[in-house]
Image 1 (cartoon, rainbow, N blue to C red):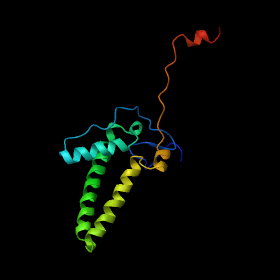
Image 2 (cartoon, rainbow, N blue to C red):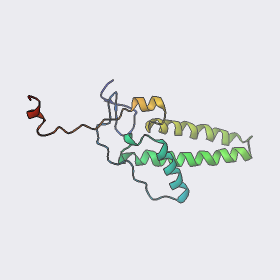
Image 3 (cartoon, helix red, strand yellow):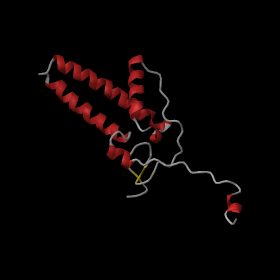
Image 4 (cartoon, rainbow, N blue to C red):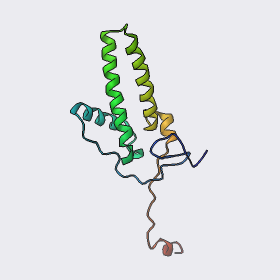
Length: 132
């Protein structure tokens, strides 16, 4: 339904663009060096025009899930028969994929989260020059 709040994250409208102006995107919170590196890598992959400061919580969760999933993968490499690790990997992967959808990481997500184009300012004298 056009113009209804959807699952597109950050209060974005489904079938429309984000109604809020671009505010520079999320500001990195205080975190460990490893988390900070993961934050930077993640932000490089995201469509920055779609991010708002409020998205800090979603990005932070994505960083946490990314790092936890990396640890689980390493543990699975060391112990491939561990059924609990395989279940945890599936659960963390599903959660990370949901978060990535909110952040517009796939082509389908980016299409769904339309980015508002900045309005061009009209020249104060444009109305006078139209008749010439």
